[in-house]
Image (tube, rainbow, N blue to C red):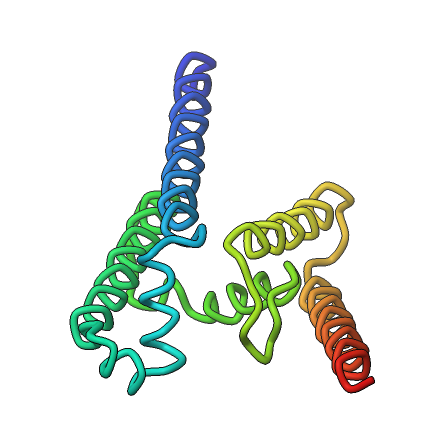
Length: 175
């Protein structure tokens, strides 16, 4: 392969990487807009937490649920397209165990494992931390076998801190 072909291949890789970053940022921006104390967010929250109350107050429970599942499906399809584009091909088992990585990113970012507290930006912080760990292992030349161990310790730390903060808050509310 000559030098010009190598440069072209590198340019194609950089362009694909920029597209991936653009898609993720656009998706996160679209997720943040309705999550900022809007009527949409309030309606979804009421339907999720107090379904009978939502139904009695006139909120269409079924359309809200269908809409949330449709948005979730579009996001999953978009993630599949980005994953297939990055790999250059698609296989049925490409996203195996990525759901655990997503849960880890949310927990490491500060979203409570027990629910009730969370934000899109917290999940993005968790993704950033996990990405930094992965890149650090690659740049330092460390064996990637130990990466899940480090991530697991980070998750345990995040859950322990969340538990301690919840416990402290509950004690303050009691007194």
